[in-house]
Structure formats: C-alpha cells, structure tokens
Image 1 (spheres, rainbow, N blue to C red):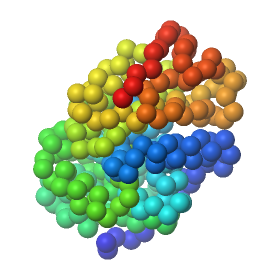
Image 2: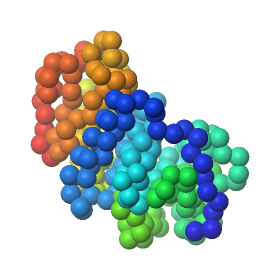
Image 3: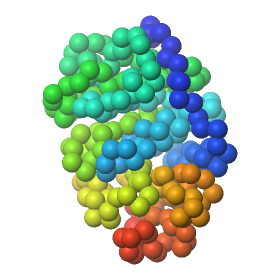
Image 4: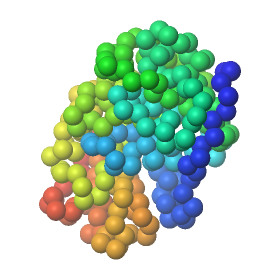
Amino acid sequence: MSNSMITLKREMKDDYNYNEAIKTLRTNIQFCGSNIKRIMLTSALPDEGKSDIAFALAQSLAQIGKRIIVIDADIRKSILVARYQLEQEIDGLSQYLSGQRVMEDIIYPTDTKGLDIIFAGPYSPNPAELLEEHLFGEMLDNLSEQYDYIVIDTPPMANLIDGAIVARYCDGAVMVIESGAISYHLEQKVKSQLDISGCRILGVVLNKVDIHAEGYYGKYGRYSKYGKYSRYSKYGKYGKYSKYGKYDAQEN
C-alpha cells in the first residue's frame, strides 16, 4: 500500500450515549458469528445517517484491535471526499472496476490504527454494470484475507439497484432508518430486495431519534437487537412505531 495517510477530520462524536450505542452495535455484530465479515450498511433514502453509522462502526471495531476496511460503493453520488475535506487526488473503486487502477492504488490508510478506506472514485455513468463485474467479487475475496471486517457503505436502495448488487457479495446487511421519516412500505421494499439477493439482514439501526419526542437517552437513540428484523419505540421491544402502526418482528 503506497498511498499517503488520510486524516479523518470527522471523528467519533463526543457523546457518551451515542458511543455506547455504537459499542452495542459493534458487540452485536461480533455475536452474529465469525463467518460475518462483509457487512453492508444501507438505507431506503439519502440522508438517513447511513455513512456516519458505517464509519462509527468501523472506527469502533478498529479500536478493539480489528483490521477494518471501509468501501464507499456509492459510485453515483459519493460525498466522502468532500466530507473529509480531502484536497489530494484520490483514486477509487470506479477506477479499479473499470481497469484503470490496481487494488493497491485505491486502498488508503487512515489516522485510525487498523482502519483503511476505499473511496468511490470519479462518477461513473454505469455504476450497476461496474459492480456486477467479476472484479468486485474478486476484490472482496482478496480483502477478506487481509481484514477482519469489510464495511461497505452502499447507495440508498429505494430507487437504485446498486445496493442489491452489492448485497449478493455480502455476509450480512444492516438497515439504517431515520426515525419517523420513512414509511413501513418503503422499508419493506428494501427488505424484499435484500431477501431476493440472499443477503442476511442482521438488524436495524433506528437513527436520528428525537429525544424529546421519543424519550431516548441520546440523539441517535437505540439500536435494534441483531438477529431479528425489528423496530424499537418507547412502547417497548415490539409494537407501535411512529405513525405507521403495528410492526411484527420477523426471524431471519
């Protein structure tokens, strides 16, 4: 790996309850089994906080000595280079999948020990076709031999096929849902796409919880118990959820 180190200017939030929730998420991921190494984080729509949760999870895993690589698979509309205020020229996933770069060119070490990153790279007009190429699967196979976990940040799945393509190569998926903003039917659409892909749904993160309205202990609220597809609310483990009525948990 010859790339210069990337400084992650957006560090872990200095919020006790948020960090404890991320640690709980990390622990539950570990309890999913040693065969769960390729984990995708997805959402139905943009701006539900999926990327922040992905990086927080990756940093938390790195803090306990795991070797982690984050892959930004949003080739259509990546914002990570701008988010981390990177001024240097960055090679990324789209260039590797189109044969312009080799894998060593696109892996960047970060200032978090044990955490590396692959950026999305320049915009591609045909991201779905690139992700379907055999190179993507081969890349994940190679990375699985070098890292304890691969955390993949995918595009929102409500209207794009990209996330479903990535799911075929993953061991499990975590769905990030913005509290009170996304309909039950839209989440069912995303769940169906994941089911069809054969990717196991590890659980759900209920994000951006309004602590005044919901009575949670921190801004980002609770994280669901993994192994079940469920929604949490102030009413208890199951039952009412926002304005969308009842929701029954499903075993996976």
